[in-house]
Image 1 (spheres, rainbow, N blue to C red):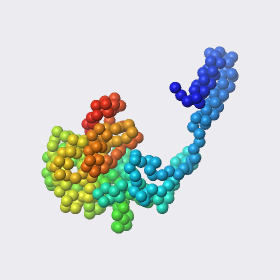
Image 2: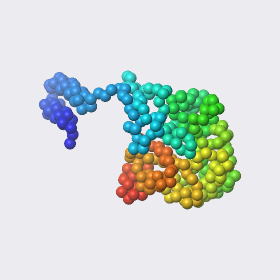
Image 3: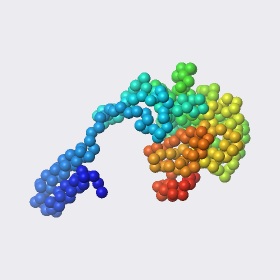
Length: 318
């Protein structure tokens, strides 16, 4: 079934097809004229079905939200983009703050800039150009950057960027990840890794460390997390978080008295897995979800996602 306009378009299409015998050479001119008419008809129908909208329109931050109000300072109209020659461009408005939230005393933009692209896996990286572009992001209000100790030179590039800013520029936030190879987690190994990240990023305290572990059969992740909590207490880490952990392990950490700031997981309009158990637990414990993959699915396939939804369970993440 379609709208009256699309139904009319199909009728025109069918009529044109039925009025021509394409196998007859003598009808080639008539076919060409019909084809041109068909194109013109579809242009008109599409114009009626999808009327032109203003290329530049006023949008309020809450239009993008899911019911949770933004901080008061962002509750003002702002223009997000304009279309010029088919290209979308952001319209800067210095007087308008980007939507943000508070986490462990930090003001975090709701859009965090990921640095996986500078890992080296995507080709040569010009560090000076990368730092210059990071400064452009920061000037536009995107002041939080997400990286990992395994993202090649990402932490070092952030350190160069951080050094290029004024020392008192406390708005800049660097979120890194601790991704060790599963195995015995001696305290010295964890301390050495965290100290290396701190030196690379050129900060006295890491704003956030997100712990990742992919082999739950090796319970050494509890030893690693206990050491991270100890380093947080000593002042080396501001916010202690997870990335791609399931709810069961989150509860284990909570039962051990470890306070989590966030968990970074795949969560989108397509991939609803966190809603089964993780979202309720996070709401109960005041844990933030930093989400990626808003435009795609990071899973085995649609069939498995559908099965997980029906059964109300979580998929095992890599």
